[in-house]
Length: 119
Length: 123
Image (cartoon, rainbow over all chains, first blue to last red; front, side):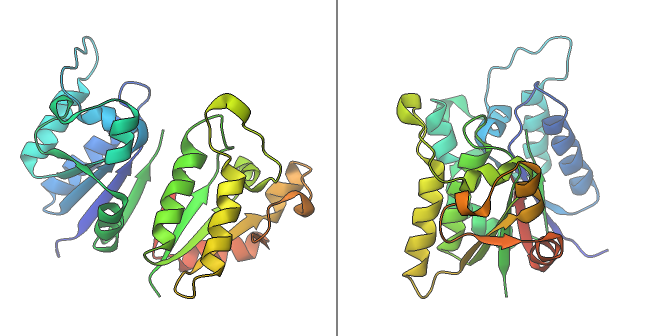
């Protein structure tokens, strides 16, 4: 099977619904199958890649994101969305870097498949 | 042609989606052939006469109209914004209430724009 590049545009916040969790599961499945995965988190989607979550009694989104990055997912976060929310680099998971719209569209162009996972 | 499409489905101001979609559309138009389809409550984005006042929101319909005007003056810019006729009718909105520069599209035309797009984001 030829390796493909899946890009997920993630605008859903963690804990507010199932969307962000589903995106992580989809990404994990694609990586398991040998594909490349980009995650471009935008709007409230950036909260899934912050540090210090204290989720109890429900799946911890930070842990899921850490595992995804360790598995090889390429993660970029909308820079202006971070600024809007007062999120700084020290608030972000290692491997989840601020990005730009120019980078976003370049990654989209280089992808075989683009999925939008909204809020 | 490497056409990129953004689908607007949410009304402006109630949530961030329309503003975010518009921001991405303007950026895309500077880089590639960009299309937007406004349907369901997304058609309200193109409603003329919005007055967000001191709410803190930028006037989104005016921003959309300005983007279309700016693009029209730039030969390298390829931006088309389609408004779904059926969604307008469902909301009793008259096409004359829309900002200038947008194009009306029926079901078949919307389907064509979407299927011809190589990439699509949904807001």
